Image (cartoon, rainbow, N blue to C red; front, side, top):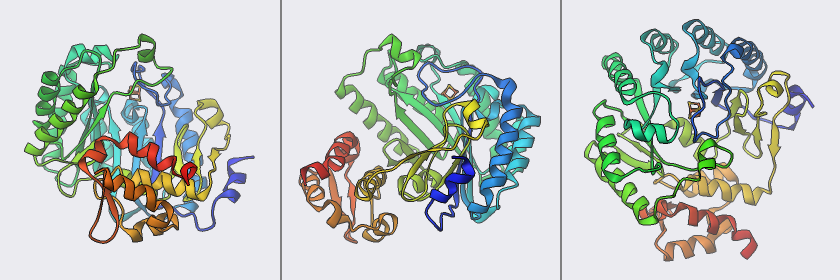
Length: 388
Ligand code: SF4
């Protein structure tokens, strides 16, 4: 089956307005990373050729974009000329809605004023900087290239450039619970990152993924109480800057939430282009080949088909990552199911346990404790069918 052939398998009316593009290149692999990327930077031009072909093929399946997210990999490892070409390829897409969001991941190590000017000129209005940590010892512990000085210099340059552009949102990604991490260093890094004025912050607990260099070192995991202390300190410190948790790992000032990720968590159909990109057609999840050569020769994506009720429960759980939770109408629109007919028993039990609460409109959302215990919610909601 070719990519062309697989489009016959998509639901009729699949016309997403959300697009993810994966740029699969990194100068050096970080020890903790399980995302697909290659260090063969000499293949970037081949990538751009094939991406252009993919966009020419898929553009008739897209509406004007509400959100476009460029992730990786390291999109800004591209040279200025390659980045210019990349932005020109994106112009083949059917354009944006008036209030679009266009994000790109940005590694401080490869930041230059010239590259940032190219992407802003192309309409970018959300820059997502991979800070991870400032402390050099912690950076080394996870094999993250660059030093605190590199990151600070890039951030202060970015801050200066974005100052006269209030419509461009700055996000910074951080990771906590690293090997030898402690609360003092984490608090210090939170204050440091906030001094550069980001309106959005993603704070991820380190997840040691099988097959990574970090997993081979089998680092000691922090105790549960310590993890809770990191979680609470993050809430307290970021609240001082008016930046509130709106999802398990995401914090934002008012009107600065990441709309692309919100769409994904709420089960909105979106398309993914580039090797390893995952996407959702409203019924089936698809994964593009996580192999550069396979992707180049046009190997079609692999489907993950599950029963409609299981998919609806997955979407229910994903939406419960967001503090607002679900209105009954939105849930029905995204899944075709009534919230309580689908999972009423387990919802009531989780409400009794204080992990979910009912919204005024009859929907449900996660309590602060439920957010912290989201893994437990997963087990309960996804194993519901077996207990029916
Ligand atoms: S964390 Fe980012 S820079 Fe590091 S290997 Fe993964 S994709 Fe590349």
